[in-house]
Image (tube, rainbow, N blue to C red):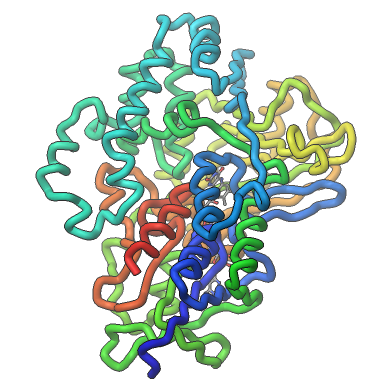
Length: 491
Ligand code: FAD
């Protein structure tokens, strides 16, 4: 077998697969991306339903500089490919008792609204966000921007032990406990507990260090691509093609082929055809990479048996009315948050008073819906797929979601729905080969979760790398982009 080949193969065109392809190409490799679907992007894709356009998955865009840096790396001007704006309202929050608050990106304005709405002491928001910034400063680089699995990167155990001892990081409390200690007011605590769901975790279990997440949303800001979230995918695919990456769609990789010693990759098999490569980057969920593509490789049992993140049921509704009281991101909270997480992570079922998230991209991207109408992406958190009776759960959830929306908005939403599509844990799993339909790979429901995620490389197999939401540093667009950066830096 040719050992001096400069061919790299990427399995899957999720955001991390595309980013890896671009990075490998700029390193001088000849790169082919094989994608099972007829379209790129995996979870970050879009579709049309009647006169409406919907982003299928992610709706919240943070840390756009990680996208921009890919264009810069390739010597291009990001603005020639991809446009986004800062969104000044991070989210509108609603409760059944009529309480509502619009979270502003301007911290002073938001802080004022919080003290007016919840009668909390002044400065509480500023202090909370300063703490979030401090957590980011202390651990951001170490945990997110490099491999945790190379000894020299963990610096040394001493540093790690020192970090675990910093009480302000709240590592030894749950996120809920940390929020309770800092914020006191139950609705404000609930609002900050919600950040656990940004990586599919349970605020009553995930460590308080996840209090870093509001830093990215408020101190750095939330953004929106003016052509919709899917333009992150389309603009990066365009960049990749412009610099010479080849994409092959409708092609499911069946196996990764190793050499006789089982210590080096040789290529992949698709439908009985062999494709040679020196480097193989798997953007397929790491669980399925081992189970389907590496049948003869020893299975890292502990790593692959970690609890999966939550999944979701999404109703994509074309709504023939505009709702000025809603914005791009809206949350309708449950009355019993703890019970909702108990249902999702312990009973592994849907909760009967779910927290409902409504994203309406047509608030900004006007052409996503016809005039006087809006495209509603209505999402509720769901357990990972364990073969529950989903048809029944979806029917029940739909009723519960509609009655919550009707009660809060004083409307009859069902009469206004003119198109409907549904995504659920089963279809998330089948469309993107995400084990159990999890949105973010493994959950962060333990303080050791970061260390138990699969590394971005395979120690004893040369040329094999892992990228995407199921491996280090975790799920969500920015972290998937970082997985590509970490993995390609190790090539
Ligand atoms: P994936 O998107 O998982 O794609 C993997 C790709 O590999 C797929 O296209 C699949 O078809 C392909 N593939 C798999 N196996 C093979 C094979 N054997 N051969 C060929 N191709 C293969 N993140 C955010 O940052 N903000 C959000 O607001 C947000 N909301 C979300 C809402 C939903 C409903 C979902 C589903 C996810 C959300 N996420 C969000 C998470 C985010 O979408 C993911 O973390 C991220 O997109 C995962 O990217 P990935 O690179 O792991 O690849």
